[in-house]
Image 1 (cartoon, rainbow, N blue to C red):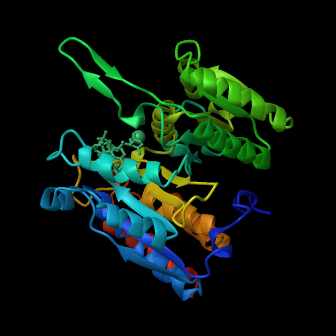
Image 2: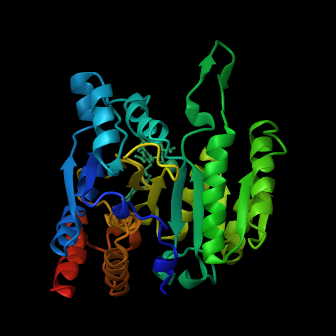
Length: 368
Ligand code: NAD
Ligand code: IPM
Ligand code: MN
């Protein structure tokens, strides 16, 4: 059994809904550029007999500036009840510097769809992408499990003249869901699990994390699980990433760790992510997006690396139970990179569209 098969969601979405409905939200900046590489993948899966349909939505900065809202309640309910998953590009626009449209769109989707689990895998493809001295790509295989809805992302706080307060909320429900998913993943992979925390300072919030971690450790006696202060963990990661398997963290620490790990994969443009609600409170129980943002510095120039988005689509296919399609996409990305093709950020010369075209043409011809 391949690793990908071993990692399959035990209850693929396809088992629940014979026709999968995907909502596509390209968003801002390079979001629409990287999303262009997704449509051929969806058409290809459809041509292989997968039952799926999709609709693209224009939510993002333009929509917000035009209508005054990111996502109306009616549209949110339509996404929640009428789709199985969302493919998301990126959000963020210099015209809205406080990012409130992003809060009302991406953070709302993560929070109100209860997507507590955010999985950000780090499996670099090429040795040349790993900037650590003497470390080969094959030696790194780390799965970050980031809680995706809480901590300081509750967006509560206030600013006074000489004082500013941000609250961080942690609930046992969200923490338990995230940690259980992380333990299950480590158990299936047969790898160690590390909880990144700062319980020495964040006595209340991370104290709760430690208690639930201990509880789950008893339920998963075969998983080698340890807690580590998040600051020390970052130093360890850079010095010896080989010792890590699954890393679980709260929303804030997980955000930082996952960008560090993007740096082990060749950069922000390479890192995919999958978010899901294992307890399935709504029909729409998953969202797939690259780790990167809207990259205003390169937006509109055709320079974006589309692979984080393409690999996020592979994670979506895997979540649906379409293992073969997911494996084929990952394999074609690997062979394309091995032949030296790439965008500028990973040392190549191709434009975003050219790299998308290369991967998608191979996909179609490899399965003809
Ligand atoms: P960013 O990820 O957008 O960019 C960081 C750096 O990485 C930039 O130099 C950018 O050019 C580069 N980069 C990112 N994606 C790339 C790609 N696919 N190909 C090549 N290079 C790429 O992070 P930032 O600059 O801190 O944030 C920009 C905006 O994006 C902000 O508004 C931020 O809030 C938002 N953001 C959104 C998301 C999201 O939608 N999930 C994630 C992170 C940041
Ligand atoms: C990410 C981003 C977001 C986050 C921002 C845009 C709110 O950095 O998806 O990692 O912090 O979660
Ligand atoms: Mn981030």
